[in-house]
Length: 354
Ligand SMILES: [Zn+2]
Image 1 (cartoon, rainbow, N blue to C red):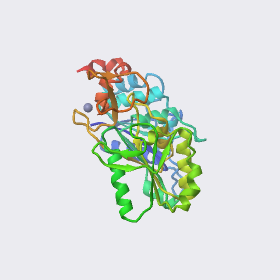
Image 2: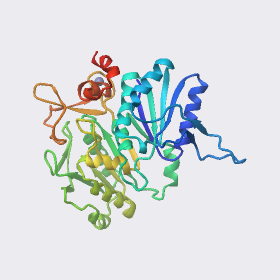
Image 3: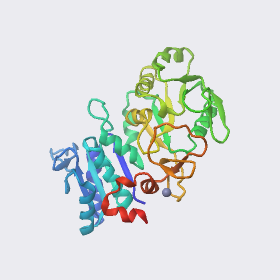
């Protein structure tokens, strides 16, 4: 099954050039694009003689009608992979076109880029790719970890669709940490069911140490956490935190050297990030994907909202608390067919309907 990959971190252009080279060596065709409008992708890797060996000319421009152009190209020269550099300059339409290339044409797409713009602001293109991607990976993560200024403490985001046992996994690791003698501080937002407890569907439960409402300033708790010798912070339903609160978690990790692991949904029932999950996609040191399965048997990364008649809901407010039957986990192809159908490019609509 074809996948949409998002890769960030050091060595993006080098990874792209090497991947394109490897496809060529095995007689497979690739499309190479650069969203920053340069006609060539050049890695900063330099040989001792001053030459730059890792370089690649683009063979398609990013722009409007991207899906249609890839579709037509693929008809003449079958394509094994589409490689795109500088995702931070893609439009959200470009990102959606690439998602359709993966899931209607069956072509792998690897998108390279920074998670945010230079100043740290959200890049609509990178964000849309992260929302829709099967996999989000940091290139050579072990190396960047070893270089990291913060050696121990990290901000981690464990994310998956509904029914990926996020809360169960959180509660299990909580008990493991406590058994290992760690002093763990458990936080959760006030939204959702029984707000003072963290509860999994299967019946596991723990009392939260701290409830976050929309006005809570989390960073102010830092001194208290230090005084209490807190070793680890766990956050359930982190998608419901606001952007400022995720920024505060980031500062707690950096300033107090306390590791924080957040659990939460990546996207809502229409495939868009929540405030908290979007900021975590941009700021966390590591992203861990929790798996679950669609009714068709493929891996599910999306959530769909279902009405009382079992029909897919395609509009409405972002938050509607799960009553145990109004959400299902769903794979990209089933999500396209049932929720994103209006956006499917005309050329492949008949194929999606089957
Ligand atoms: Zn499916």
